[in-house]
Image 1 (cartoon, rainbow, N blue to C red):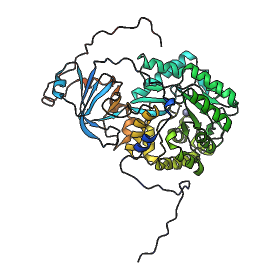
Image 2 (image 1 turned 120 degrees about the vertical axis):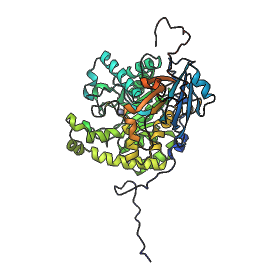
Image 3 (image 1 turned 45 degrees about the horizontal axis):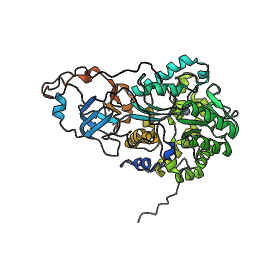
Image 4 (image 1 turned 180 degrees about the vertical axis):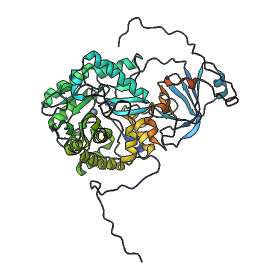
Length: 496
Ligand SMILES: [Zn+2]
């Protein structure tokens, strides 16, 4: 008889804890479904202009990854106007192929996925030195913000949740210009400046200061009046500042409660920079909807969050920690320095906490803090690989979080985030198999076709040419001619 093995129960907070490997169906679908933000917090349902109602797009022979939990399967997809008309099986394909008004894309087995989403976006971070962001002139800054918006959609991102802007109206005007069809960009929920106490600032030039409940309420009212969709609180420190520790929380209970009351009264949700243990608890205790980072969550905070998990999402912005440790040296912030101030310790803590959250069904979404020098715009999909490689997500779970999860954060999961008939047609044709190699999403050259709201944002010239091999599609559809749509009456004066 083999000797009895002693199995020690190791807590998730211990560095020795190893969660069990998992390779089954996506577990987070159910948890995302259970999210239940109060209907009074529904963001405005912005409409993206510029899609002709008669537009028809037909994707033939694509590997369909719906992000509904179903495994990928081969089929066709039809888009009519702004929405998917059918997904999987399309009636009358032969007729559609012959119709010169239908734009036909031959998938040849490439994978069609829903447009991606980012839960923590800073369009106005310009890829440089954050400390000098406050010095940028408003005109230059507006152009740079528009450029980031274009970069998101070029990267296959069709939904972004604004997590603070460097100037109070930058996010708002860019959102409105995207919606008006004037500039390319994702669907966007705009934020204002991040609010911090005067003794808790992270970056002075881009912060709205407020001390005490009254002044904080005033800042929120001001931002709501400007037209933001979300409110951002900067509750904890950040090691790179060297004076405000990520383990310190600067907000009081009274202040947090006042902020939630004021924002929720106006129908706006709040998101918070909350690395410290106490800042996470503060978020849960008072109902701050979106918790960013949560690196130093402890057992008590985890239990509190689990109990209220239908009311919160966590977006760790994990790539910032990883890139600050590994990639910041080229910019003069060396690994030894990053480790010395605590980034390694924070990353280890964060990984343990986030794995446990995923295990307990707390919704964790990718995205976050791109737009610093060493987390450049355009590298957003690194998050999905981190979710798979570090946080215990399967590739399928990471993709569901980035699509359906972010749609739920928009409170529009009934019409966004999945490939499903009647949903808005936001999708990306990927030259690869994301479930087998999630890193493929980081390669822009592999994102062959990008569609938002039924409008083609990107498609190389070769996508418009029928297969060159005779007989491959019966030569029934040589070259798609230019669209010939009826005239649309134009506005005399542009006004957002
Ligand atoms: Zn951020």
